[in-house]
Image (cartoon, rainbow, N blue to C red; front, side, top):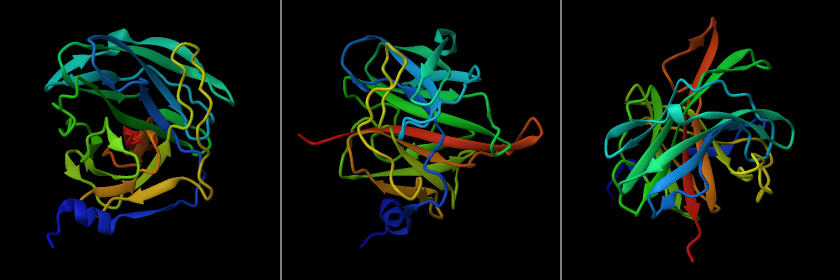
Length: 265
């Protein structure tokens, strides 16, 4: 039997319940529909949140970068950003609305490079470099390409139509090279944002007992997760980036990836 990278990842990945809190920080670049047929503008919400349990929302500073990559071309979206207040179940915090304009068919890879967030309880900064995807007319163009970020998760399954009940495999990269032994927190977006009211919709699932769901990347940076439910799933490779300090404090520079799963009907 051939030992393909995917097969090695399935064999080597360790999926477990972490001993830490279930409250995982996740940077969102969210639009409710990721498979679009018509050209036009799509609103994108940038929120730093705990979407599994509809928990605490963190204040976002103005992102360093917000752009999309389409057919290899970088499209700056930072000028489309406007500040909003997002109200979660526990508190309200600063967030942003942006606009992604769909023109030609293909993939639009959205990238957010946020300002690091100071987590007072841990006395560290967190910067989650985030990718999410929108596709127009079901034509694949860019989803399988690395974007040259300081750290990122490269999807090995098309991220806009994962089959619920199947597996998703990603590869953690740091400065373009595979990152081994990285802890990947896995988050279900149980409460999706309402695009009009800037509040969460009713949660459709509850967090797992025992803490955050975690996988560990193998020697070649691969990890695999069995996707149990339709909806948005986020993967955060913790501390996978090369930058370890910000403003004289420890920095966790994470790679975040969002994918969309569907039930087969």
